[in-house]
Image 1 (cartoon, rainbow, N blue to C red):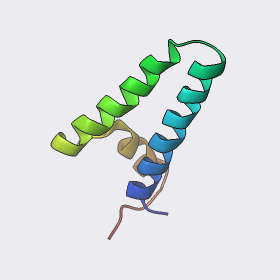
Image 2 (image 1 turned 180 degrees about the vertical axis):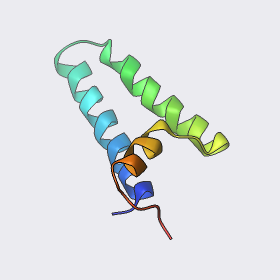
Image 3 (image 1 turned 135 degrees about the vertical axis):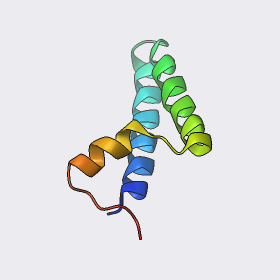
Image 4 (image 1 turned 60 degrees about the vertical axis):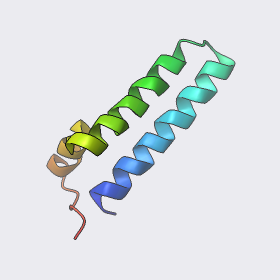
Length: 64
């Protein structure tokens, strides 16, 4: 799996998980959802994503 697909999978998973936690536990989990969304938005404009750095160091390949 490429790094780009992994970033999308991580973001989707974290957003869904934080929405579930907000529904069942505390609305403050929506702050985490906001953080993930803002990180995705800034990544679209700047090309910088901290998760990409971590995944590359873990040995995952960049897409062709």
